[in-house]
Length: 197
Image (cartoon, rainbow, N blue to C red):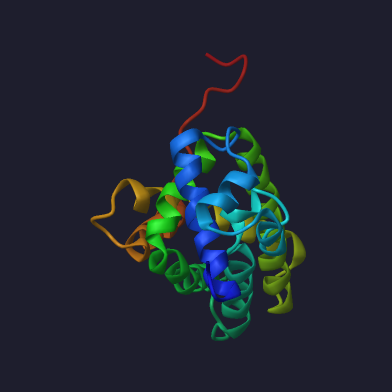
């Protein structure tokens, strides 16, 4: 039996991850997760409101780390540079927890209910990052666009890191933000106007 709340929480997360991989998310119950972790179902609900939240437990820590890094960034940086700096530091949370992060992303990718929850969590996170940018003086519309764009780059970098672990998440993040800059600097392709030939 786990002795501490933190240990019980870790065991529940590990048990849920194992069961979701073995049986799938929809076929796994909270009672089964609790039994695998060696606790009762009441203990599960003391730690998590539902079986989806087991996979999103670090979201609050990630949001706090990102907003803190945006606030603490040196003056004079452009918004995307502030975000790259923040995502690089916050990305260490994922890197330190790769054994959980990798299967978690795979389970979310194949489970509609989890993808829906991930979208809601991403919206809350980007709202918080946009507000942190506004606090730095970035105009509202641009702060929102930067936060959404930065999150998309972070998400793409995290998936690339899962697919190609030979490089660090940091390296994938730098590449994703370099790609963003290249994309915005590239000349648009020549387009034929409607009715002209």
